[in-house]
Length: 83
Length: 272
Image (tube, rainbow over all chains, first blue to last red; front, side):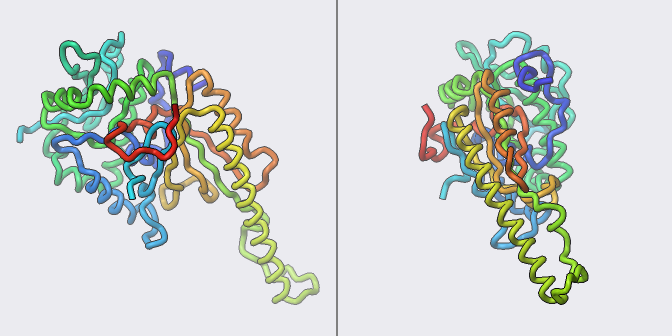
């Protein structure tokens, strides 16, 4: 059964359990960044990544946070593409 | 600060039939219900919001919580559940995790401030889905294990060991070459079929539980009518190649393509 049909049809896709790492790729480096009241600044989100780095990858200079340096091309871009 | 703040998940068009009903039974972040906050008269936009306890979502608490992987996972999955439910009904512009406002008036203000860009982004994403494409190098089982120097066929232990090491390295190089070839095929398919391409960092560490070494972790924005064909073609990209695996995840709401032009650096190559 096709998940694509689900997007336009009535069946919600929430039933599918996605891998946390795939989700974090998208939620921590994708999504529109708004400057809100309590919203974490980009720097704070970077702090989150740095903190998580200890949990998620073994820390080394050659092995930075998994969410640093994501690059988007095509018709959009990503914050982390900034030098 | 009051004891509740507004957690915003996404921006959607307000004039979508059945959206309120679709959200009626969704449990959002912090176990809270989810509702629409329309921008106001004369606007077609609404934010999707939950009222959450301020004590957990003000800056210092949030920063502390986000370092707790269990808390992060709970919030991320709740956020995703809301996005998925919305995606079944309309085009969704997901917001970055943990976008929090003091109250709904401030949310409306944010909608007002960028309403043109939100509208443009929603138009651009309408009728499109995101696929995740990951390429893995899988060293072959018979050479991936530790070298067994006891497998002596008259060469002597030292030479047998070196030969086995060479074979192992050869197999790894071969798998990397195959992965490179698969990556080229994937990019070709992407250029022909997709309208957007985003790169994520390759996945490593504890959370990267899939077998093999992840060498490509990309996302493609694809028109819905081409989505199944794209997926099928991508899954064939590793055909005839040994030691390489191509995984497709999704369909996702267009998380990796939900960025506002002007607020973020421009991509070097712009799609039409």
